[in-house]
Length: 126
Image (cartoon, rainbow, N blue to C red; front, side, top):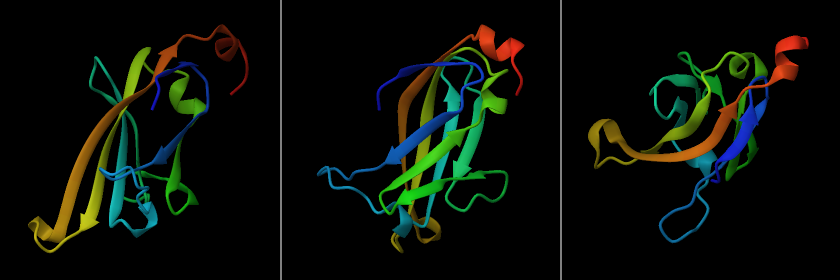
């Protein structure tokens, strides 16, 4: 993913498409779970967290197709968020009996957006 400039108060849709080591798209629907955290790069704080199931304090991801899901960071979350770069911390959970609790966890991190201030959101509704 490419780091893009976003503004406070933006609704930020993040498309998630995973590939294996050969570049073949991964069927996200078939995964046991997918956890996605949007984390501030320097503060290390979590802005919002998502999962396929959307339970236990996680917001549900939106399925676009079996290989593409979307995480929507809403404007109500971004309007007062700390400025700076954010990255995705992703945990891909696959069912595999050879691993602890029969779950293989693969973690990946990618920078995704740089949040800057916005005058229009401060003075407008929402």
